[in-house]
Image (tube, rainbow, N blue to C red; front, top):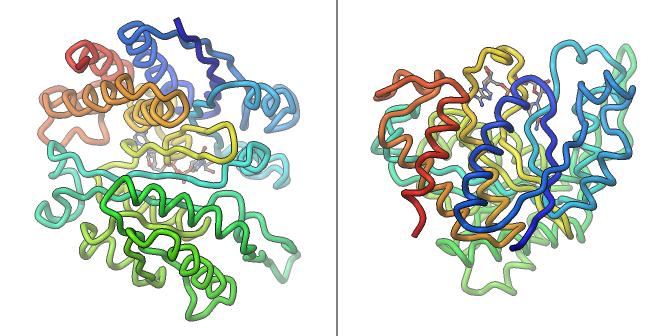
Length: 358
Ligand code: NAD
């Protein structure tokens, strides 16, 4: 029987609660589909800072690199917000992504028919939305030098190299080939030189994918178009900061930030994580929605472990649970038959796996 080594990073806030439910569902699919998952728990974030003085201990990088994939909860919390920047959990996360070379963040935003009412946008506008945001993850303004701050001036640098744009563009075009074959590249080329290079290079790369239609859009227009007519998008290709913002916007189209998974992939190891943060405002209350993390586990099975049937079974189990009216508190007002705790919905989704074995 195949055995896969999974690095588990629970992190802070609701991280441990949502990872526990993803593991529950993973354990069910692994026994249903006959493979083994071996977990190696690694420290990162505020909890790692408390124990080691570093939000990203070296052991965590080594452990992650030695695994087949990383399943990640979330990091951060108010109590660490006043630390020097390099000690803050968020700095650990950026260093972690860089160390693993995960340059492409794939963020699907799919509207479930069962949750049409949960969207803040009219049902007829969002029904059938199926967008993949392909966000560059280890370049751009979050990493550019120089950067700094004194009492009177703060500054960051947005920089992209040709090579960084080329590799993320290839990812987006390849993904589009498996979907509706449309890429919309989002930038701010009317103002930023870095965006003009982005646009030029994406256009060049597109010539290698004649079956995929490329369009360009300024980020301010894209933010507006996403709520005006989200169905016009198939793959959105964009840089680090624009992708960060647009994918949170896309999450509300779908109903709750607690629903959206992501995969961060690169040369070798992928990191699979919900798009939301550690939600300190609801941590420890047992009300967090674990579906984004459970769906991230499905992406891990699909992209990292090539266990397609098991991944499909998780997606199917999530849909059935929602169809049958099981909701966590964030979605309680939308046709809930039963409002569930984090643990309860995890157990319910795990329970549907056997019905989803095809
Ligand atoms: P957040 O995503 O943690 O929370 C935003 C809002 O969404 C909150 O009201 C929260 O309760 C709600 N929410 C988030 N996830 C939910 C879930 N699964 N179920 C139900 N409700 C959910 O963003 P924030 O409040 O801006 O940040 C909180 C902390 O998380 C900060 O320290 C931030 O730096 C960190 N953060 C971490 C990551 C990560 O680990 N990848 C990403 C974003 C933010």
